[in-house]
Structures are given as C-alpha cells and as structure tokens.
Length: 270
Length: 270
Image 1 (cartoon, rainbow over the protein chains, first blue to last red):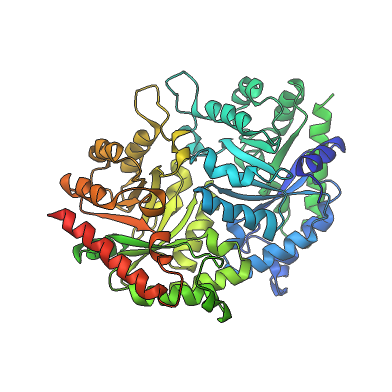
Image 2: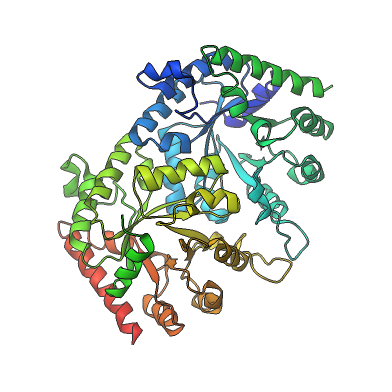
C-alpha cells in the first residue's frame, strides 16, 4: 500500500489541496436518492465518481456512519470501496484513549477499514497515541487548534511558560514525529493566529478545517500558507461541496465547486 | 427511562460501587467459547448474568466492538440487550467533536443504542460537548485526569494562573453542569492527587479508572473518598474482573471477584 504522506505529496504536486469531507447526512441528501437501497452510500459513490480527479483526499466523519449502527458501517464500507487507491482517505473520529484501547482503534482504522490517515485527540498524552504512531506508513493528524468556538476553552489557555496549550501541543507533536507520520489539525478561523504559528508547525502536514460553513476565507488562507513556504496541506470542505446543490445535479455541482476551490488555491500560489 | 444519575445513586445506596468494564477481547476470552456463534456476546452475556446483582454499572469500551465492524456492532447490541434496565450503562468512547458531529455521536449513543452515560473528551471545549449535555436524563463523564502515563503530557501542565489543566477542566465541568448531568473521570493512580482535588470536584459523580491492571489500590482509594464525604462514585475494573479466570468458571469467578471488591469498598466506609 502506498505511503500516506506520499499520497498527500502527490495530490499537492498535482495542484489538489482540497479534502472532500464526507459528512453525509441522510436528512440532507437529495430526495431522489431515498429510493436507493443505501442512499448514503449511493450519494457518496456519485460524489466520489465526480470529484476523484480533483480531490486531494476524502475525509470520512465517522459519527455520520456510526449513528446508524450496522447499516451505517455498511455505508462506510461501500464508500471506502469507491475511493481510488491513490487518494488519501482520512478517518475523522478524533480518537485517543489508554494504550490497549487506542491499539484497538488503530487496528480498526488502519487494518480493518484500511484508512490511510486518522484524526486524533492528544489530551491523554503520548502513550494514548503511540499505537497509531507505530504505523509508519500512515498519517496521523493530531488536534492542535480546532475551528470551533470552544477552542478558546482549553486549547487557547495560556500555560505557565507563556505558550498557549495548542502551541505546546504542536511542539509535542514534533517530538513524537520520529516516524515522519504526524500531521496537525489547525483551524482556519483566525488567519493571524495561523500565520503567527507557522514557524512552530515547520514541515508537518496540516489539515485545515473551518473554511466554508465554518467561515474561513480560502484565498487568504492559502496565500498565507504558500507565502510562508508551506506546501503540504489539506483544506477540508465538507458541506460547502457535498451539499452545494440539492437536486439530481448534486455530484456535477460538487465537482464544479471543488474545481473552483482548487483554482482559488492554485491562483494564490503565484 | 430512569434518570442515569438516579441509577448511579440507587446502585451506590445498595452498596454497589464497582463498574464492570466490558473490554471484551476475542483473543482473551476462554477458548471453549470460540465455538459459539458470537463468542464475545456470549462471554458478555454470561458475565452480565453472573454479576448483575452486584454491578454498579457496566462500561462498554467501544473500541473493542468497533474494531470488528458490523459483527462487532452486533456483539454490542446483544450485550446491551443482556443488561437489566435498572443498571447504568456507560458508553466509553471518549468522544468530542464540533457541534454538528457531536450531535450525531450523542444521538447514536443516547438514542440509537440507548446508553445511559458516555465518557467525553473536553479538549474541543463547551460547544463540542453541548449536544451531550442537552440530554438531561443522561450522565456525561468528562475526562479530567486519566490514569495513563500520558496524563502528564497535557492534563498536568500548569496554567498561567497556577492551576493544572485538569483542575481548570474540573471547574469548567462544574460551570457546564446546569442540567445536573455531568460527572468526571479522575484516575486513581495517585491518591494524594485525588485527595488534594476532591474539594474542586464537589458533588460531581466520579468515574475512577486505574484500579487493578493499571495499579491503583482499592481500599486506600475508597477510604479517601468516603473520608472526604464523597458517596457518589464508580470504580471501574475491567480486566481484573472479566479475565479473573480463563476457563469454564470465568463468569462465576468474575462474580466472586466483584463481590469481594465490593466488600473491600463497603468495609472502607466504616
């Protein structure tokens, strides 16, 4: 299987920077799909078919599948099967637990479902992530600063040494990156904050949520990144792509939107 | 459905303080069960049947079920069906995500699977937990200090105001407890630390991991709690109960161990 970091590198080299977030909600997909046997899987299949040449990655928000029990897992499996093997697939579950438990999660994501990458919550510390970090061919996106309002509650708290918790987290992630398989999640809701911290992030691949439904500006964001010499990143867009249009043309319109977002990114490079 | 806090209160009143952790691993259950159609579910069913009169709660470690995909979910469903409705059932998944995602997780745990309680990771802040906190009849155990070595990495970091992150977390949880449906997870690996912080925890129900396989001492722990007037808590024991014996007598031996642990707790009360 191809190394996950390599998949990201190849996508970025092709000019693809947008990660398509498959937060697929049965209540939000076009109504004409509801006659299908597995409407969610069919929606995803059509989205993937239409977007696969321009998607830098697909991010599967596990909550949207788990909430339907065994049926949801079937949708997950069918979705994974529809994604070409050269495209990075991220399991977005923000897991993190004691060692023997994280080991089970890592096995589940990386062996059973064969994801390339996973989002992880570092609150429980190094040993809680180690079972994931041992998979040297995978890419572990660890939460540093998230894009939601609650990021202020703990992530932006100031430590005794003057650093914010998320800054301290980034330093820890760099320490833990001995297998070159760590990345970070850093929200795009405050560009100045991102800009001020890029020197800490160094060469870690960045997964950036917060564009679109959550309010961030794509052009300004990617200008900032390229301007600082950062070339390895993914900007996640979920609802802004997959629900761009709610009728029969949803997949075509999702692809158009993706192409247009990629254009904005590539234009900001120059 | 009975209020979750009430279930905990009733269990404690009956002298039951031990939460049986169902971290059931196909590779660790007695070999004679492997001929069963669903060995994990059968193991759990026998454990539950033998322990239900003395268990204060059951905690289901989701990783151990999710890692087997649809088959694992079937095991989860069969396990849940075997637990009497008056006993608290905790979903141990340590979730926490942006609002629309946490909403899906909350719906999954509290509506689809009908758990009474869930363990939650607070790193993403208040809005990441709110969808859970809105279920006023449930009991949300939020991570403050965990029992693993990595708790030192972030949870014990000192903030600018002199508090440790876990202490600040406890204060936030108390603020968020407007529906009286919050509890905390506080590891038992350092009793002095627990003792020093009980004044912060006040009346929040406590879920205490770290006894048994992880090294904490039960008698000292519960002496400390009762001594400080704390009466609403659960001490989780997983491997120490369910894998006490690895042959045909596993369920009987698990029940004996549970009764004996409960005795230690009740003796320490006096």
